[in-house]
Length: 359
Image 1 (spheres, helix red, strand yellow):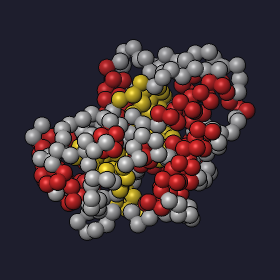
Image 2 (cartoon, one colour; image 1 turned 90 degrees about the horizontal axis):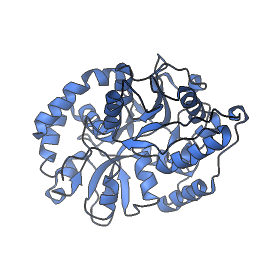
Image 3 (cartoon, helix red, strand yellow; image 1 turned 135 degrees about the vertical axis):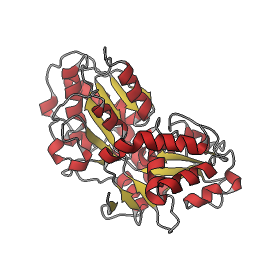
């Protein structure tokens, strides 16, 4: 597996809060959304049910409302859970699916595909998505790019943590929490990144030591940043999309960081939001329309409203929030895993992790 270094667009350095507030204003006023004549028709009138990992709440609200205006197709309020939990629910409903579209993080979308829970569909525009971000069998494609990070309380975590080793400091005992690997996408990413940085055994040894400070297992990531903001926690795991959205709205006392390894190098990993059509979807035609909409050039241009990068190579990743994220990523190694290989080892990796931490 290769390690890539991200080089964003030329960066104009903005004060962090000012930059995020500016983007929040754009999101509220709806700037950046264009019209898509090809998506306009009478619509089928059928609704669409989306099962999704946590995050993207405000962006979903805005984009799904726009989709309904353009097509006449309603989108029900998304069913949200941890990335693994939402795929488990699809598995339980296999004989009578209620979801039409799945949006989740890796490697759980790959697990859904390998479990035959997703239908093949070549979404228009997928040819503009890099090969590593789309399934060769056309069962899923990324719709937004996203990256693992940690967050800390800027008032109480002083000096701020910089590397993984800092989190072993006794001051974090009971004040640190991360979402559970194997259940949550961000928690799984944390385990995988540690294995990448420290090696599999090194990661297990580290997490065994960290367990004495862990406030306890939790199946989803989204509840953690509010706890960090109010001081119940000092540090938690997250992803850039989730954390930047929270910093600009409900969690102004938090800041994200990319932890350094033993060699002093900071590293993260790409954990895109992938989307696919559920096999046997009750409203498959409407689900296909929604996938087309999310990957359309017009919607991809609004990725900045979600504090994310577009995945289409023909859509520039510009806007204040994307520039700020690119600035934060300068000098950070971005790992883009082979998710097929990750999935093959995932069950064993999670089992070894649970044994190491005594669960």
